Length: 289
Image (cartoon, rainbow, N blue to C red; front, side, top):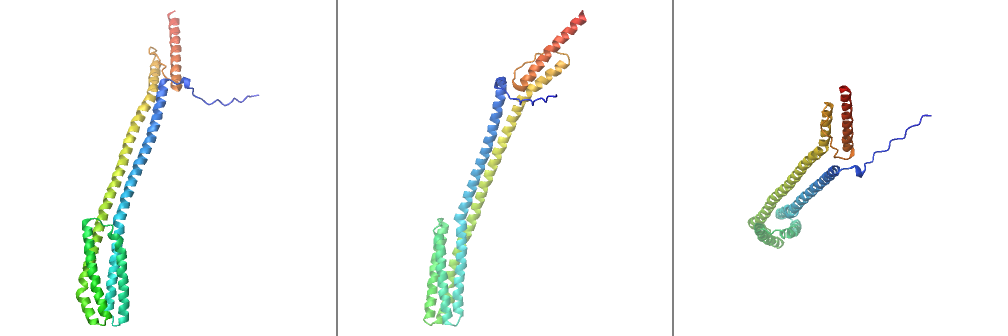
């Protein structure tokens, strides 16, 4: 009855068979793995830091410039709509319709104040504050002229109201609109500069990440080559010694200075050298006799 051989037991390395060079190689491999992990963590931290800086810069752009830009644009739109209401009131010949236009106009003016009040508190630059003061002065002058027009119209003096409208209302309105337009242009310019700065910070972070990655990759390549050399060099030495022995030169001694498979190969080569020396010696003796 044929007996099926058992499966060979898996090779289990013994710590006692490892030499100090094997321990050194293992230590180097562990260090290389730790260095790779450290490099990955460093790249993640650098990338995260750069993303946080870019997000902070962009958030600053939004809160500092984008919100005021939107509010100023909305205020300009409402301002021109209020001006259109008083124009319509002056063009109609019906007092009731004119008074309705006046009521809607004053509601729009209150909306302008509601929009601009929180925005003006954000401006701290002297140039912005000067434009805010110019707008407030012109806006107060515009509302004063507008109130005179409304009072004259309610008193029945439509001709004088139209004359006041044509003569005195346009200059303060244009000044208020110009002040808001100047503030809006300043916010657009500031937003462009802040965005460019944020973009520069993001680009610098990307370059730093690439630089750290390239440096780490170069270090890993150098260490990998050195480690590969420390592993492959003993095998090359054994290969050269085997070729020397194949050419008939048995004078070089085989040094067994490693453990594991490399040490087993060195010991096998040393045993083969001893046996070949004995065989050659016996052949010579028989030839001489």
